[in-house]
Figure (cartoon, protein in one colour):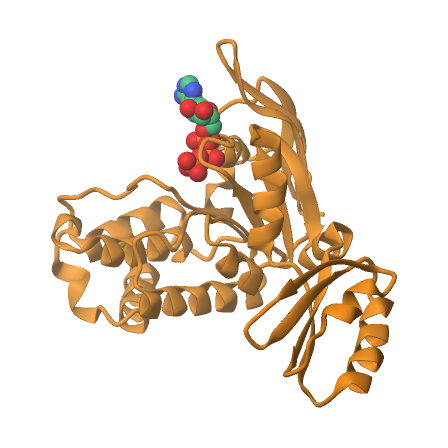
Length: 299
Ligand SMILES: Nc1ncnc2c1ncn2[C@@H]1O[C@H](COP(=O)(O)OP(=O)(O)OP(=O)(O)O)[C@@H](O)[C@H]1O
């Protein structure tokens, strides 16, 4: 594991923002860090980056604590605006990359290539404050990865972006992972997390309540369901052992099942009733899992 967060706690006075949190991320992995507002995601990121000291516990990147000397290896896109509003975009990108040991020439060349890729080549000479929120977010992403860090931490990277720009940034982040970077990002958009991540953690009030690969998390949550679209009454199928719940839909019905093999039994029985138009075994979405885990704990 490349990133090790080991039993980290952060207290602000009497308030525990992060509570005995452990997390391990493989080199080259993409980890989704999820949680309700105030769950402790940004506080955890700030501890990983060495911007906040943990009250207890430790963080290690490739076996060593992250310090100022690690900064060429690390990229961070903060949730709050992290750029100088009055500074010109190119000047700022080059300045930040030089702080992380990149040469001026390389930084200029890379910045121009990224601005071109994000379809804003003419923004280099504009001040950051002149850009829309979404375009500022593109610049923040460029600032976080221009110096080619091996660990990239992105706090809500897609906030304020329209769907076309979300796709553009997603692709850039995936390409950056393919080049070998280890990436951790937070998002409130479960569909983005599902699409991009290998592993996830769900944080609730400072504690990890779910973690693992998306596949494992879905399997262990259970609650697979079968969707059948047929023009006959499917009510009788709800009597099959292993069917937990039955809901009629406009096109047929959805059956909550206790284990995967029940799907095959349902299929066989359904085919005896008439013509089948659609059959699918559906896994729970991350959104459902998030609401069930975090919502239930808040109830
Ligand atoms: N410097 C601080 N002093 C006191 N409390 C703080 C401080 N920083 C964060 N907190 C509190 O710690 C908790 C966790 O905050 P944090 O910003 O880490 O949450 P988050 O999961 O990133 O939330 P969001 O999704 O809303 O960005 C919140 O209750 C917040 O008010």
